[in-house]
Length: 280
Ligand SMILES: Cc1cc2nc3c(=O)[nH]c(=O)nc-3n(C[C@H](O)[C@H](O)[C@H](O)COP(=O)(O)OP(=O)(O)OC[C@H]3O[C@@H](n4cnc5c(N)ncnc54)[C@H](O)[C@@H]3O)c2cc1C
Figure (cartoon, rainbow, N blue to C red):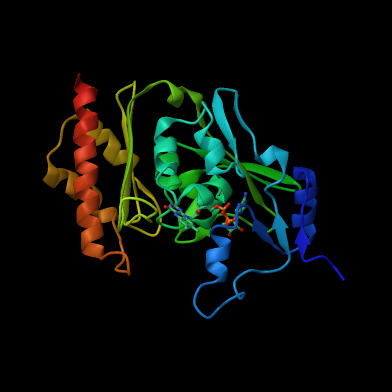
């Protein structure tokens, strides 16, 4: 009988398995296991066989190459927190994710591929202009993170493909004049986002701003960033620029109205903080 669990030890081995077998990629399992236990559909969600990818060395590296910081998809949050090549804003977001146990297992690649609107790494990686390396046995492609996330739990990943790494410009380790991630949840720790905002100000005086949890996918509008970086705008104008992109939901954690109003207030206050430095 064929094995229902694979433990590839190299990327080549993984790509070979993915090429021939319809399967479920399993990194840290912190989203997959929750999915599996949801409601009465126990065991219904995960297609067998399962491929454990966390042992693969190539997916666990953090390095600087060609002016990019390149983070392997299977790097756990705990590993990222200890690495000097991970920007503070990403570490700040990671520190809000689960508790130490979840951070030991959960991976950055899993956070992206699960594509929850509440995924905390996604708005941060969006403001860092992150790109993803996606690989299959016969092809490799680079795709922008904001294009990879297609909607709630939907990503641009085809059969046979795996997310190998995430990269962003290494200059972001040193050239940020302001960087902040904030989220609002039900309580102060161990909580999922009702709303999240990530913002950076680069040394060429450009504000990048992204919102999480208030639409099926992360919201980053570069056209708006040009306007809000050029001159200081009031709250009403800020709301006019961003509200049309919001499409939050009512759920057990919050209401659409609360989410959208909070996102605007949080986003605007962080914008004012960044703008002060932009002009100084
Ligand atoms: C108690 C608890 C608290 C949590 N709190 C937070 C929180 O505050 N904020 C937050 O954002 N998240 C939170 N999470 C969610 C979770 O920890 C993260 O989303 C985590 O990063 C998922 O990574 P993983 O390796 O466990 O993914 P997995 O569960 O292994 O996989 C998730 C999905 O991604 C796919 N996948 C994984 N890696 C790859 C890859 N390299 N290529 C292609 N597909 C891949 C899998 O097939 C699966 O569909 C919490 C989870 C728990 C259990």
